[in-house]
Every structure is written in C-alpha cells, then in structure tokens.
Picture 1 (cartoon, rainbow, N blue to C red):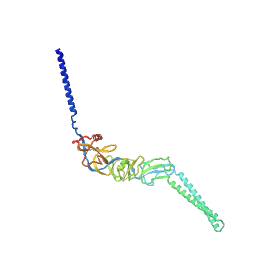
Picture 2: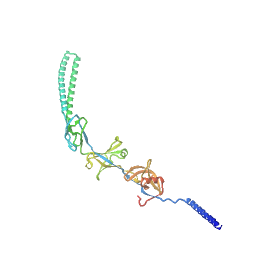
Picture 3: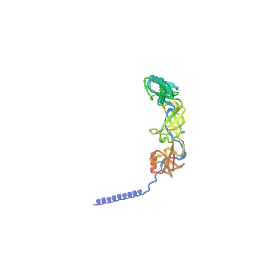
Picture 4: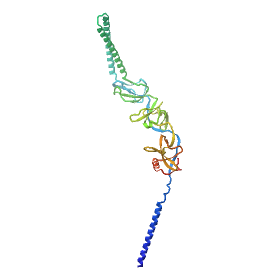
Length: 369
C-alpha cells in the first residue's frame, strides 16, 4: 500500500515539475517575441563621388575604303568583244583603249549613212534646179502662185532631208568610235568583267576603274548613334596598333532602305595603304558635353526611367536622372543630384536590390572609389 502511495506522490511531483518548466519556457518565449529586433548591419557598398566635368562618347564601328573617283566602264554599242587589253591592277591613262568591240556592223552603218547623204544631196540639187526654173516662170506670170509655193515647199523638204542625212552620218561615225572602249581618266583597273568573245551590249559593265589619291571612308550607323555625330567630329582609324586621325567630312541627310545613315570621311590617301574595298576599324569621338559625371557602373537603366543610388544619411536612395552623354567610363547626367554627392557603383543586380529595399549602407573603405 505504501508503495502505491509513493508512486502517486512521485507522479504528481513530476507532472508539477514538467508543468512548471513548460510555463517558464512559454513566458520566456513571449518575452523574447516582444523584444525589439536588433539593429540591422549596414550593407557594404562601393561608392563614387559625383563631379562636374566633360565627357565624349566613343562610337566604335568599321569603315569601308572607297576611291573618291571611280567609274564603271560600260559598252555603248553592241558587238562581240575582239580583245581586252587590261586586267585587274593595271594602270591606265586617259584615252587608253581598254577593249575593242567588233566594228563591222558599225562600219556598214556608216556606209549606209553616206549613201543616204549622197542621195539627199543629189535630190537637193535637182529640187534647187526645179525651184530656180519655177521662180523664173512665176516672175514671168507663167505659173500660178500655188505651183510656185509647192516648189518652194519641196525645196525646204529636200534641205531638211539633207540635214537629217548628215546628222545620221555623224551619229554613225560617233557610234563607230565607241567600238574602242577607252579610259575616261588616269587610274587603275580594279575589276574586269568580260573576256574576248563575250557579247557586249549598251549598258553592260566591262571594267571598273578607280583614280589614285583621295579616298572616302564610309561607315553606316543606326539613327540614334548618327544623331550624336556631326561634321568636324574626330575619327580615329585603327589597324594593327597603328592609328590615323581625321575629321568627319559629311553625314548623309537620308537613311538607306535598312534605316542606316552614312558617315563619310575624306582622306588625301588611303589609310595604312589599304586597297579600295577594304575595311578598317574606326572610333568616332563626339563633341565633349559638360555635366555631372558618374561612373558607368553607377547607372541603373530601367524600362521607364534611369536611376542612380544616392547615399544620403547612410541610407540608399534611388534618384531618377537623365543621361546626357555616355562616355567610355563615365556618364554625364542631369537630375536631382549635385557635385560632391556620393553614389553607389556596382552590378545592375545589386543596384536593383538597393533601389527596391533602400537599406542602410556603408562605403567599403577598402574598395572606395
């Protein structure tokens, strides 16, 4: 009996101890839950100081080398090409024969025109004699005025026929000269498109010739990049570590069918001795723009706005800005910031998080910029 009483007593004591412990633990949990949260540690960031200065944008692309004076030499008459006297790379002089077209058909046309001219001249002489006779008869009242006027009209018609025949002969002779295809200026043959035995026809290109000297360097740019350039801006051509500086000569006023615009630079000679048709790397440098400068890595480009993360009273504060000019390392901006302000620099993902959460921040002294 005593043994059962002891068991009951110990059970009651154990339950009381457990209940008391649970109560104490509950009170401690409640107390902990009502404790204020510990202050968050400031987030370390890299920073830069906004400064006033100027920045130029560098637009990198390629330029095509073209001769400033070139010509596509086309046939002006039809016929079989008898011989071609030049090939690619040959130097030519103005008036030099490049190719010959079979002239027999043209020679026949000249002979036919001569025969028509001779017949027209013979007819004119006959009509002139008739008119002289009719004039004498009219003055002697031997024929009517109507007959005399008819004789005069026949004379004018014969004269016109003679002029037309002479013009036809002159045209035939001119066409005959086109059987010899000649160079229009001193230069170099850059392309030959025919061989002896090929058939030439009016408008068919036979050769391309380019004059030495001045060259054009042509770049095509999108509309927004083109708008940032103007004639006189600097162009730096680069090839295998060598550079040559020049100024943009002109910007074409219209875009091509692909909506690209043309930037043209004229040089007295081809850069680095490059041949026509070659391409060369070029950097166009825009006119410097004054403004507030921040590092390129301080810009957060959004869909609807552009931001920088300002450090103000130890806290991240996103501030909208407008980009005025993008340089290689710095960007000129306008907005509610001032020279001397401190902005955060970093990858876009970090800037996005700072803009959304606006935490307390501290500049990383070991990496401060």
